[in-house]
Amino acid sequence: MKKVLITGGAGFIGSNFVNLLMEDRPEYHITVLDKLTYAGNLKNLAKWKDNPHFTFIKADLFDKIKIEEIFQKESFDFVVHFAAESHVDRSITGPEVFLQTNIFGTFYLLESIKKYWSPNSNEKRFLHVSTDEVYGSLGDSGFFTETTPYAPNSPYSASKASSDHLVRAYHHTYNLPVITTNCSNNYGPYHFPEKLIPLMILNCLREKPLPVYGDGKNIRDWLFVKDHCHAILLVLENGRIGESYNIGTRNEKNNLEIVETICKKMDKHFPDKKPHNRLITYVKDRPGHDFRYAIDPSKIEKELGWKPKYDFDSAIQQTIDWYIQNENWWSEILSGEYLKYYQNQYGIN
Ligand code: NAD
Ligand code: DAU
Image (tube, rainbow, N blue to C red):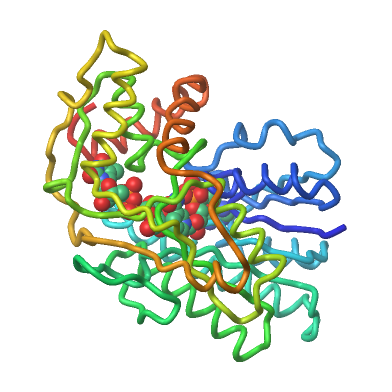
C-alpha cells in the first residue's frame, strides 16, 4: 500500500492520472491537492469522491504554511506534481501567477519534502511533471533529448524551466529522491477548452470560427493523455532517481493538419453542417510563437520499455467522441470566466 499525493489532480492530465491509479493500483491511497483554479474541476474526479482510497484537499501551493501542514500530518510515499498554470497565452497576458504557482509552488513543495522526508528514504519519490517547451523552439529538423540545453521562450516555459532547475538542485544539494518528466502536447478527455484541440472541437460543435494563429504551420508533437499517464506511472515506479525522461510518440503535426483532421471527422458526425473547414479563420499570431517541438523518446523506450498503446487516428476520434458525449462537462465551463477570457484573447464571443 503506497500513499500518493497528486498535486493538480483536478486538472486535465492530473485527473486522467488519478483515474489510471484508482483503476490500476486499487491498493494505493490517493490524495489530490488542488487549488481548483479555473482549470481545476471536481467533476473530473466525481466518481472517486466516496471511495475510501481517495481524499481531496483544496489548497494553494503558494500557501507555504498550508503545504507544510499537509506534509507534517501525512507521510506520502510518492508525490506526483502536476499542479501548474499551464496555458502559454495566459502567461503572456498575466505572467505573475505563473511565477507564484510554477516556481514558488514547486519550491514550497520541495522545502516541505526536505523537512519531512528522511534523507535516505529510498522508497520515496517526487515526480515533477514538466514540458518540452523548456527546450525552446526547433527548426525544420532535430529533436529534443534529455540533454538539449534549456532555452524557454514564454513566461510559462520560463517558469517551468525554473521549477525543473529547482527540482534538480534539491536532488544534488539535499539528496531529495526526484525524477523529472518532460512531455509534448497532450490531448484527450477533460482537456480544458482554451487549448487548441478541445477549442477546435467545441467551436466546430457550436459552428463558431476556428481561430488559427499565424499561418497554421507551427508544429507540435501530439501525445494521447492516456499514453502519457502510463508513461508517468512507469517512471514513478521504475525510473532512476535524479534522472529526467522525455515523453512523446513521434507524432508531429502542424496546427492546420490538426484542425483539418478535426473538421473531417466532424463532417462525418454532422454531414448536414459540412464542410466544417469553412469555419477556419486566420488570426493574429501568438507573440514569440515557438515554431516546432519534437521529442526523442529513446531513453524511456530503451530504459523502461515504454511504448504508446494508441495511434493518433483512433485517439483523436476517442477525444472527439468524448466531447460530443459530455456536453454537461463543457457547457458549464464555456460560460462565466471562460467567456471573458475568450473575448479578451480572440476579440469575439
Ligand atoms: P491544467 O491547467 O489542466 O491543470 C492544472 C491543475 O493545477 C488544475 O487542476 C489547477 O486547479 C491546479 N492548480 C493550478 N494552480 C495551483 C496552485 N497554486 N495550487 C494548487 N493547484 C493548482 O494543466 P494540465 O494540462 O493538466 O498540465 C499538468 C502539468 O503537465 C503541468 O505542470 C503542465 O505544465 C504539464 N504539461 C502539460 C502539457 C499539456 O499538453 N497539457 C504538456 C506538457 C507538460
Ligand atoms: O508542449 C507542451 C505544452 O503544450 C504544455 O507545456 C502546455 O501546458 C500546453 O498548453 C501546450 O502548449 P501549446 O502552446 O503548444 O498548446 P496550445 O494548445 O495552446 O497551442 C497549440 C498550438 O496551436 C500552438 O502552436 C498555438 C496554436 N493555437 C492555439 C490556440 C489556443 C492556435 O493556432 N489557435 C488557438 O486558438
